[in-house]
Image (tube, rainbow, N blue to C red):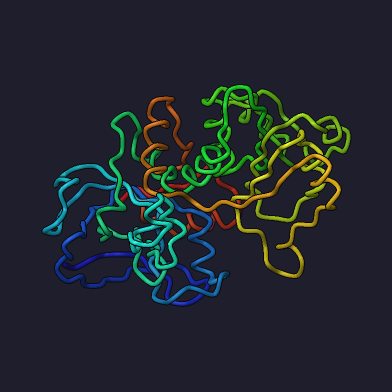
Length: 339
């Protein structure tokens, strides 16, 4: 099978047309004709080799929506022509303790969609069919694509914490992840506070479901949040005044970090005084994407509550412009390619 794709040939390079061949699909494989693919900031990190895991030529893309074009001999749950999506993960061992308990995202042998294999900036992509998910009819493809990475990334820790309508929730960073987190927390019935360094996002934050908006650069506004929140999700990728956010938590509160922080110098560290944690029985956790059951649940929840990404749609002819918009943090709020 001949695939037309777009690849970076070296770190930081612009993407150029790149063709490659695929053999016959394996028994559990599925070939997907790509119609939409999100441009996630993780794609930019991979293009630039920020994480030192990239291999070139590199075809990015891991927020993929398309239609099933071919299936392996053991594929029963998907059919030709069905609309499906693929996220950050395209496979796992399905045998270890993590996989057997629904945490395929923690499998040591997980397969990543565009790491050491070619991703969704292409006309077709191949994946393990068990990591391709039916897209509910009520969600359009451009709005659905970012749910497959950004959506599950924020939904998964909310589910694990057990958010209920009585909880008061803070969302730090109103961007590609944060604007979805606001929608999910609001749909769960929570009282939601948005934290942002950009006051221009205030109206959007309320539109996405925030009940309160805090300019996190304003010391008085931050102080006013002390002991008001049960749970905080930080989607920020830069160092923050972590103690101030821990002070915003009520007893038994939890702060979850879902974005990789810069690892340069000490910016990747999280410094919080022990008395802040101990006195209020507070905790800090991390979270990365989610397992297959969580992905299916998230998509169903999003369909039921009309949650979708606000996406800027680009054609493949302007692919490098789309990537640069994400690299410059200019997107409002996700960027999606339409093939």
